[in-house]
Length: 186
Image (cartoon, rainbow, N blue to C red; front, side):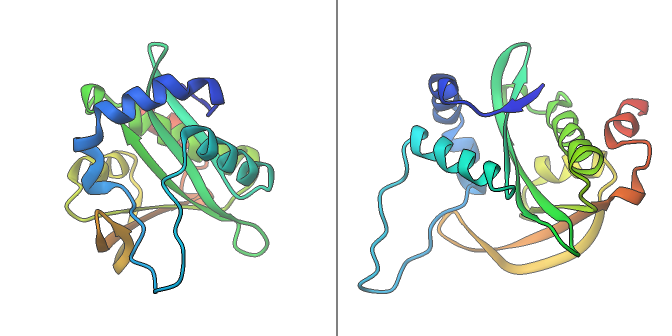
């Protein structure tokens, strides 16, 4: 199940994040070194993060979700970079607890989010950018038949350096029946 992230998810989110720190470190965004004189604050608290995500959601730029499996918080999925106007697109990022990885939880969560983007929000395109060596994450989009669009060299700062990412995308016309329906039919 997907649902909006809440402040009261704090303990469960922090525990899942702590438990999976080593497993997720290679894939998590980092802040690049900044020029002298520019201040970078400490990593935000959970409460600050949720408040930021909610402000972005209220502005129509983001949809922050937690992923639940059997009632337990097992990950996060964020629809970000929502662009309206002539583009009507967004990108999806996600992580899942290593203890439940490989059970179809994240493909289901991505399918739910994409269907919401296409059928409720009226977006036209959704993309997912993944480091080439992140095989488990690539399997998620491959299972859902996202189209591979190529490589974005040094695209995001991840794990202390600028990293290449593969781009996968879908448009609304490619899944008229809905992505969840396609995923379930397999």
